[in-house]
Length: 161
Image (cartoon, rainbow, N blue to C red):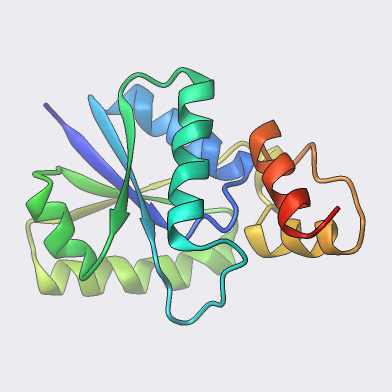
């Protein structure tokens, strides 16, 4: 069974993330969406909330070969522990490439058996980020076209709207 890990903070999960997950689900036997704590970010949702929101969205989407887990520790160690074939990362723009390429090379240096595969979301999501979605929601804009319905509901509730 070919397993891939899709790591991220997913604060919140966007339609761009979901598009990458759906693409990965067509390419691999099993996709593990690994929700991570990023010490460089101050998340709106807690780790357990983000994990639950991702799991509920995946269930609503009917993705049978996709599961959610919480990522703790080094990604490459997690990949090996889960017996995965690779890491999948989404690339929206050239600006993402430099950072993602650096991460992929570092992961390869830590464990040369761990591969990284880059997937591009649909062009309609190439501008989309969790940070922008949160900003739009905070300012009262409609984020319905950018996130799945359950995520929109949770986001608005979290912001007291």
